Image 1 (cartoon, helix red, strand yellow):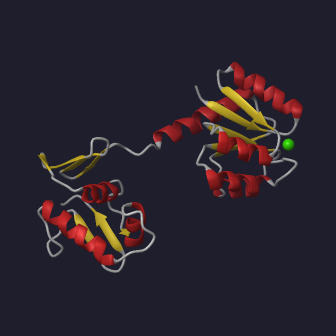
Image 2 (image 1 turned 135 degrees about the vertical axis):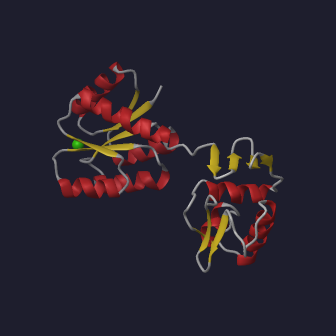
Image 3 (image 1 turned 120 degrees about the vertical axis):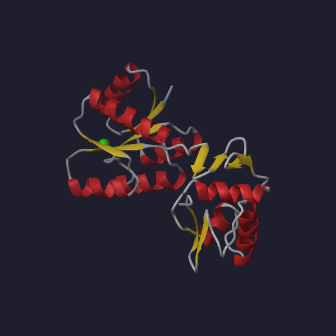
Length: 225
Ligand code: CA
């Protein structure tokens, strides 16, 4: 059952929201200040947040940014007026959706269901396919045209990272950070692993099929034509 955190300082509005949301089988937690909401997000991560923007202690956009600093939890902001400029700003600051007060409980409920659906749908896929490559991320097995590839841990991670982003040129810096977990490093580290991986895929830098180096930028994986 999903936990909804209601951040609302007005006791009447808050009580009504708790009543309505609980009646729809959400587990509801509530706080009345921005700082309390940050503590709650850190200590008891909810599945979705309804964030009132008119809080006594912090500006709504600041609160949202601080929440985003510690969590990707889907967040619906509740604004008092339909101010398009402000709503655009909030969506850019990391809000997933918004509701304009006064809103009905049906409306809020539909929004909650929608952001939860999107959040769940956004889980990275466990089976990646690019052309004849099939990569099972969970069991860490990769096949090329039906034949299992014998990859080292690093080669597998590199291949899976690229295959999750087919067609995108992934910068070397990003590969170092995400695959090697290093904030800096030698380009040769990547080149060496790439050349081993290429050999296992039956290709070379001079005659690439899946792995394409974009000079000075990074590497991308594509399905061969
Ligand atoms: Ca308020």
